[in-house]
Structures are given as C-alpha cells and as structure tokens.
Amino acid sequence: MPATDIAAIEAVLHTYFDGLHEGDTAKLDAAFHPCAHLYSDKDGTVQDLPREQWFEWVRNRPNPKAQGLARDDRVLMIDQPGPELAMAKVNCQIPPRYFTDYLVLLKTAQGWKIVSKVFRADVRE
Image 1 (cartoon, rainbow, N blue to C red):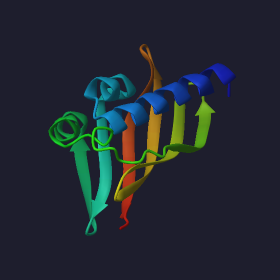
Image 2: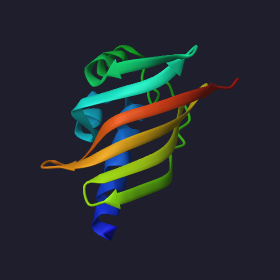
Image 3: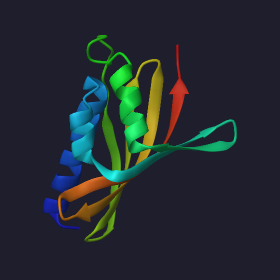
Image 4: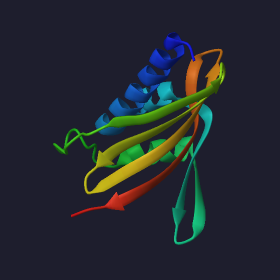
C-alpha cells in the first residue's frame, strides 16, 4: 500500500476525530461520503443511521470539547487490500462512552471518504 494513501487515510481519520470531539459537522462532512451510514447493535437489533441523521444528533448535543471531556483517539489498524479500498479500526471516546469503530473507506474523485461506520460503545463510570 502506497505511503501516500496511508497518509491520506490517516488525515481523513484525524479529521473525523477532530469533528467528533469538536462537534463540527463540517469536519465530519469532509471525512464522510454523503452516502455513508452508521451501524450498531441495540438489544440484538441492527441500527442503521444515515449520515445526515447522525449530523443532526451531533449538532444538537453538547460538544465534548466545550464540555472539557478527555480526548483519546487511536488508529489501531489500517488495512488496504487495493488502491480504492481501506478499512480502519479506531478507538475514540466521549466519556463515559468509549467507542471502537470499524470505518470502511473508498478512494473517490474527492479523495478518501468514509462510506460506512460500524461501532460499539462501552459505558464506563
């Protein structure tokens, strides 16, 4: 996998982390393709959240940075099986919720974009 692709993917991931921590949907918009969906499990049922609905939630919740919440983002793994596809496993947090995300990225005409996010959260006191 070309180092330039890895650097570009890492830049998208850091834009995602910044947008999440700052509650900045413009940054999230830069990282996520318009078709993106977010998936999670709730009591054995798959939750399918379109990007725009998630952006509404982000806009309407107190942002973690303004609340002074601790930030700890980590890229755990990037797998790039081909020139147009990558998957990243990351950790991020909005205490007391600690997330593991699997982010699928495609290389588009606009550069690398997250097209799918599958996540889980642990709640810790």
